[in-house]
Image (cartoon, rainbow, N blue to C red; front, side):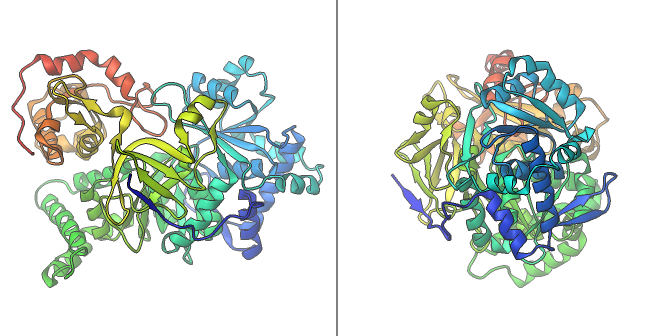
Length: 608
């Protein structure tokens, strides 16, 4: 059973909590900027010093105390990613309580489950609509005593309510939490069954933050380091980055509206960003589409290929040739500078997680000057458990174990993880805890392999393995990830369990479709019409052939079925963290899957 470990760079004192990290940041640089707040109408940013932020946290914590929140109580936070999310999060910790994040897009049933299972006492929500959603299930929430609405001035009212609470009482409560005390309960995405509440301690976050600030100092701990948070803070990935920025000294910004992301990036100018691969795919595909047709499109594609070739050459002993360097410099002036400007002009680093980015995009972005560090982790590992290193980037892998982490690959290929960042239990679910935690190791359910240097590659998820009628085991992730890289494709689900060959359900990207049609000389058409158009279908077949290059013939996609319904969180086919609910898709589109195997198929190309 292969096993690799990376030693910790710093150990966590048992008395340390997340609040300790904030206090130390204030002590080091009280007037230094910790957060920048964007004006309500967009545009300019206002600096908030470490001292000013800590004062706001303290005042809000007093309000929580006055509102009846006791040490250990659960406080739900349901909001988009914005300054107030971070403020409430740290105020909850300062009051000695436990934060329970809820995605702001959650349904009434999801809100009821999370608030009831974790015994939430107070819910802080963003809008009156969120409050109405909570009120709709409140009769079945006996522990819920209050709902605070951010947009209705609820936080300011809490501060007024807490004005008479003694400062020493908040300081006492802040000091109650040690490294091994509960910091948060984060509910998993729930691709199958009810979400499980993952209990994460202060040690889990503090260990990662302190070690990350050292191991990734070039990314997040340089003078001027800053990041713009736009991923949901209800997700453990963004939540960890938020905590990491406290000891690293980085400045945090927030933007709640994905439609305003590019203007926010341009005005905030982050030096590092975090995103899922779909964001990087969208940026690339949109850039290619904006290049238009003819000469401009040829220039973009030449520049993209040059970028990839340049990045690959960096991994050779001789490096890029003089001719390639010259081409790369020209492409930088013509194309790359515009792409970097779209990210604010200063971003040199990006952290990608949630799914494989793919080697082609990894090389493309490194070639234009944005180093994408792929990482791997789960809610149960407080986000990162393996991350590519800035000084030893190996594209196509998620890097070696994070400092303090041990990773082993079981005989069946499952990834097991151990370290101070691994969760302590599933809330009120001892059976699931016992199944996942074995002798100090967390069984992730993911499949992977490690090279001789301990760099990890993710190959799939054990519960998603497809076994064809011929007995071939197929991990769908590699095919799905490659297919999603095509500009026409929004989502993809590979099928074939118990069937004679592998097929794929594909949905079209409605945002990219008009530009693709225009660039291919086709008249505008809606998604339903495009799904049946011969040229669209042919393009998707070619995309499947390119995806098949990564697998053997027995694993290759032989037929694609184009759906007219996209998978979204609103229609129940995606989780809030943008993972496909595979079981739901397989059940609801069973007729389309049957049709794949009822009709003749085009012979597959042999890629074995």
